Length: 399
Ligand code: HEM
Image (tube, rainbow, N blue to C red; front, side):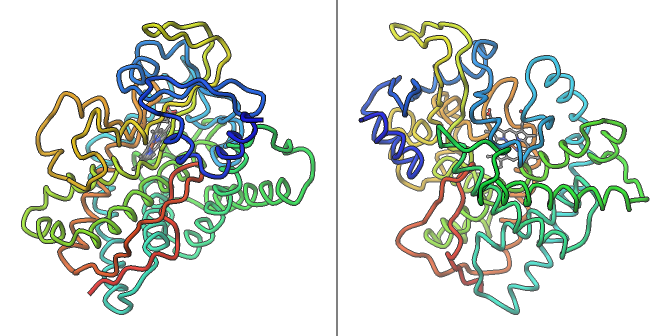
């Protein structure tokens, strides 16, 4: 019975379950429904699983298959081994110096638009505002789309699809997509809606800008899946992390002033936000062999959850770990180095990390230079979907 209670808890409040299970252990084995899961709470072992022993810990198919409506079947997120390695090599050009300079200019332009809007309407739902901004930016950077209406429509569809796929991801027995239910039909409709909007755009597109996703993969049969993956992975996480950053800045206004005085402070604040509210709050793998870690063995076929959020908030690695203290990132500390990994680690780590920091630097600095941010509530609300999202409805005031 306990296993089904755990399963229910995992579906309804995965972060809480991760916290409740820990109790000072490095590994916790538990059953969620019929399956055996190992939760990993140790930063060294997490790194070993993701880096040195990664070939024995491939992606957890149960999880990754269920996010396919969002990433396509053949987007980078879904690839393993040589195929993934080769695709990542090809994608490197997208994050080199010149495209990053373009990305910075695009982010600046769209953030200026947001600044102008905020001057007219100072109260905004921060989660929505960041989603709109970053999706618009991602569509322009990767696909050369500059159409606010399309960005808005795709954004709404992505948010709903993320929610639906997120609850399927945590369910052990979701109805297969081929069986028509209200939920599966809706998922298919949303998936199709997004893909056809992108497809329409690709067909209409005549101008080519050097170094964009659509050019680098122009002849690739998986182009549409790469587009889906990049737009999903490239907007959802960055948008949430920025929403959390502004919620934190409203709560700790002294850091708004520090950013105004020194633009480099924005990165420290952003890192602390990524530590406390990591968009990828857990990483899912599956053991393909028995692997020994000290006196603990992970058995072949077990589901492995790297408890990223728990590790990043552990007192073992960060003094006053629950407190908001951006200055902790000013000094390079050995412990923080491996216990802070919001972009994952190893061969499947985030390919867009550099872009996320470029975008965050522009958005945080520009907004803090122009406004005082108010409207903090006692608590910051976060919803664990596929990624951790700032709950919509949290309104901040920019004056
Ligand atoms: C704050 C922002 C971001 C966070 C916290 C984040 C986090 C992550 C993490 C943790 C992973 C690894 C997942 C795993 O190991 O299972 C990942 C993978 C990935 N991310 Fe990000 N990401 C962010 C922004 C971006 C951006 C801007 C892009 C733009 C393209 C992007 C594209 C990807 C892709 C394509 C993968 C899959 C890589 C692979 O499987 O080889 N991410 N991200």
